Length: 315
Image (cartoon, rainbow, N blue to C red):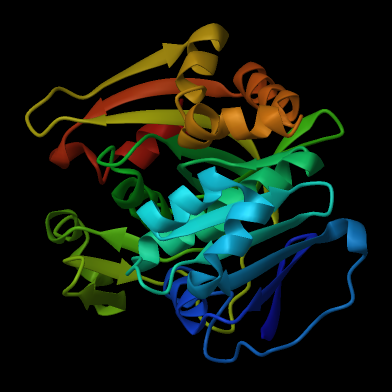
């Protein structure tokens, strides 16, 4: 079994895997952390800040899955091709993959990495959010919303306006000493062919993927260093309308909390976090974010994308 480590701010992520395809999925989605110079290594970090992932193929040992993990885990292994056990006390996750089932890189990355990472971060009063995060002069803008809201193209628009990139999909939001911090989690930016037409100057930095039919951009060079933290002062909830009118509506704190509560990690994974007695941490983070930041619902169309960052900055 191979062992790999990489740093994510104050946490050390240690991965033990006998499945090369799992590492390939991580490399595809996290090119900054797992680039060509990535080595099988370990760094010296306190055990209290270490999060371990163990990934196995267990196709030939279904009796062990049933006896140790239960029939539900065995059913998941057979139906979805994987099952997982997250132990927040030992800060670890074990993911079992069915070698007979073909699992996409996207599923491996989200279900086999991001989900257990999210549950383990909660014990440190930190969480992943499904959003983009950019910052200028330490003033962060969180762009939240589901698929199709335009988070990626808006984050590129903010970058072109002088903002610093933190994350395009899963930034870390941490509650520390009573304050909310946004932490970078660098991933590749995915853009549709239509959205790229807004910024022809960036085409040289894009790579086309014929399987997903999307362009991808690595926002950081190999020798670059992403920022560590920023405050989060504004939270945007974009609504894309191809032929709509540009409008901005400021949210009251309760309205802002209701919008934040629609976040995928809060909405879908709260059951798991409460089961592990970590739900209150997630709730505290979202409540503090709602009370300390300014929230806006932004309705916009294609013609508004380029100028939207300047409007938001001046609010």
